Amino acid sequence: MNELCKIIKDMVVPNFMNIRTSLRTYDRDALCCGSPCWRWAYHAIHSADKWFINPCVYDEPPFHEEGLDNPDKPATVVLSDEQLLEYLDAVEKKTLDYIDSLTDEMLYERPENCEHTRMELVLRQFRHISFHTGMLNGQTALATGKFPMWVSQADKYVDDGIFFGRYRKGQVTK
Image (cartoon, rainbow, N blue to C red; front, side, top):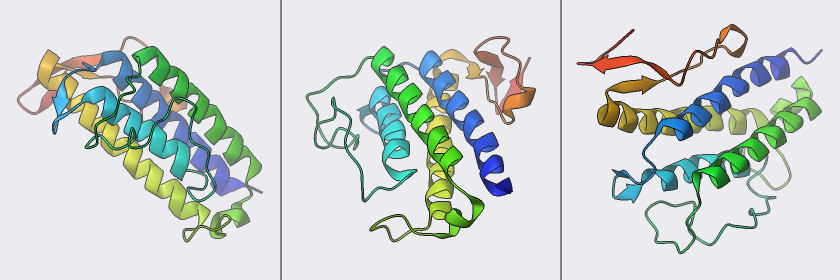
């Protein structure tokens, strides 16, 4: 039985839903720590693409250039939100297909040439995606006074819009 893999998959889906909502609500050109938010979005998606499965055996996407995944480095490539969302869709599919190929026992193994177990890689990406999604949502909340929808459990989610409500003095209200 692959009970752990099923739990992981059930938790990965909301992570991708949340970052997708961030991309639908953020100001891509707003600066965060000196870089436009779209670069932080790409950084998070690229990290999920590279680090969720095996960072040691990885091919960069065709539009990638050296340093594009590091918002502190200048880059000549500028990705549109449509490109970012298409990339996110591809990474989500790749990730879910990968999880479907695993057994619970494989979570304790290290992928080829990698110092981390598959479970460690999964947990690192949960943390990383959530961190950057929150960062982007914080930028949106400050700029608009609205907090983007946040999904904690995909099967209980009802899409009634992309904003949760009004953000005021540390509280989200309907």
